[in-house]
Length: 225
Image (tube, rainbow, N blue to C red; front, side, top):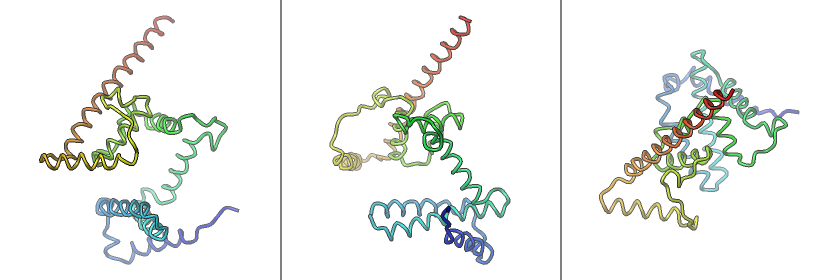
């Protein structure tokens, strides 16, 4: 028997009632709720790092409320509802895991496999497509390097030297660099963004060369026919 979740249904009904009966809830829009979404996401992260299950359950509930809130606004405007949201993400997960929901072999590199399927689905031609511009420079740098790796581009090919380091020291090293920047009167966020732009440009150049090689190979094969 499939599990039922009466409290999830109850929360949806509570959200219906709030939008109908509370002036504040009724006037909210997707845009007005953005900062709450960011805030609740940060609080979930803190709860995860605290290791406190009760705290985590509470903060996940607050984040779930934000998802339901946005879906309720869209439903009232007859655009989509929470059922459509759940359906789309479930379909996506099934589609991107053919080794779980089909008879495909488990790929050797699960992350690269996921990114490749995602790129095909969204028609992306660059590893940089789909990375949010508003991420912090550190979070974006992490995403850019990870995405480049998943597309077969190693950091050293992008001008980023990777050397062995004790994982426990990485955070301290980052803080040390921030302290150096502060002592020199430099904005570390801004400097990281600038350095990352250079890495991104190198990645675009590498992709352009690769695309040119593919095009040349395709043309040569066409001539051979």
